[in-house]
Length: 387
Ligand code: CAA
Ligand code: FAD
Image (tube, rainbow, N blue to C red):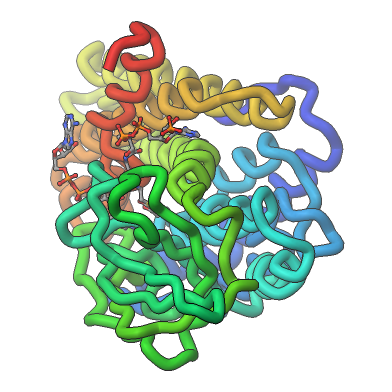
């Protein structure tokens, strides 16, 4: 069987969304992936199509425009989209995990109606703004400031950097410091409308990989947030961000599994077709060794990702398991893509095949939503009880 075909008795619903994702991935995304990678253009039409098919709000209840499914369904669908094109799956993961998830968990009824529906249906794009030029891993060192006014509104001033979908987002979940003396407990989450005064965008960042996923710096200059645009309670923003990122890391782990699977499947095919010294290169033990190690890393990654998703679906704490899945899957994707280039050799280095794109795309999974070092820190702190 194929590497993705682990059957834990997936439900009809889970298999259905996997099928829908696989069909769109094959018919619409895979054929255009190379062109989007080259141009760096934002794949708006494809994103709308994914939204129309429930893929921008997989865990969002139908009443808020989503597919009403569970975290396992999310993993299965993400893997399919990522296997066709990682950049599409980055946009998908931010809308699903980072934008919708946080508002569903912490938002008011009115906020869910206003913000989640438009994004889950794919009519608008969402973003998540935590990182700043001087604070990535050390997220509580943020300087973006929100000052409370007499009328209960907040005035926001500051910069956020590396914002995925920043160039196209209508709404953004923003984290800003409301009480600098309280550090992590002085951070609050806000819902930002990018069409309003005081919001500015910087240039779109040219990147190594996931080039069709648009990333930019954003800036706030006396941007006014109304009291009903505060997400959750004042001072609870950092916990909201960390909880949202726990779920987000399942999405990035799934993305890594998708990239790794694409690179692995291409390698299997090539090693059967390509001949050297009178035999298929796949009959050389040195190539077989690579293929076997790829398969082990890929299967381990998928199983760990499903475990984290299962725990989330059961309502259990899954911080450590999500970090284990994200770390394992992202390092596996990078290793598999690296070996895939080696197996394809000259053709692996050529733009005529997607292998070099998998290699460039895989790298980001070791960086965003917490670097590999940060995943190791989260896991080891949990296991040792030390800091
Ligand atoms: N869930 C809930 N609460 C949590 C939590 C979690 N997973 N992790 C920490 N917290 C709480 C702690 O309990 C603590 O609360 P109290 O003060 O009430 O005790 C508070 O948050 C502060 O925790 P720490 O002292 O552990 O914080 P820290 O400063 O040591 O940082 C960290 C911890 C894990 C390094 C964190 O800063 C981190 O995850 N950094 C990486 C940032 C990151 O992942 N950014 C991603 C940006 S989004 C993105 O990248 C999107 C994209 O690519 C597409
Ligand atoms: P730094 O934190 O400066 O880290 C530099 C190096 O030091 C890394 O190797 C790091 O692992 C290591 N390091 C740092 N602290 C420790 C430690 N305590 N122990 C050991 N090693 C450590 N952010 C958002 O908020 N929203 C987004 O939508 C978003 N999208 C992104 C899209 C892309 C394409 C990229 C590249 C980034 C995106 N980010 C986003 C930001 C991303 O989350 C950060 O880049 C990431 O968290 C790392 O932060 P940094 O780049 O500032 O690196």
